Length: 310
Image (cartoon, rainbow, N blue to C red; front, side):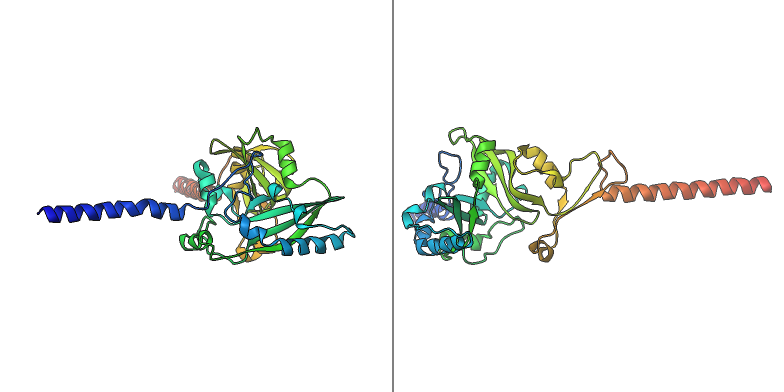
């Protein structure tokens, strides 16, 4: 009997000892923040792999400089990894508001790495070079996520852009000071409901502000009343509360995937009951009720007239 109890105890200990290892394997894509409130490429898990792309990064930068007639020699030391910024390709409203940073560990994103030149900045984009399966929230499935953290997919330098003025991070910083890193700043890019870049601030784990940064446009169809704020009225360079952003964007129905890829815009349909937030289903129900009342009233009036004639 003692041997049986001892064996059972050993099995329990072994089972519990595997739990921390399993949890550690899953949670290895940790977000690391720098003193300016942005995620840090230099301290990220993929930094060494992306740094190996220096040759491709420089080639893309030179190709971009040729389009602006810039004749400048740039070297690997000119690549400013410390100022690189990340933007996510997911709708933040699909994520849990109280754990948005945790959910982002499984989101697709792109690193943009700046290279300063005399009359502006060249920015090179790096992203995972393979499409990964996602769930209904736009986050990696567990199987895809394991491939990412196990480095079964590679990073690639893909495109370069030229900025003659401020980078998105400079615009974001000017509108919302970082407060020594106490405010986390997250940039989002194209997703199913929008195009362009916009920033979200997170304080104590909760999103607080939304800032349209570069060409932000809502995509899809919204149904509102004339007294409601439209998702089409957001202006680059303005600061909005996250609550206001969520209230407007949650009413937007996204376009079909094949249409959304090509661009599109925002279509606004106004409710017939101005001043009241009546959904389409409510309007239809009111019309049915009104038709029923009018029909019933007509029948009753007809019956009374008929009785008087008799």
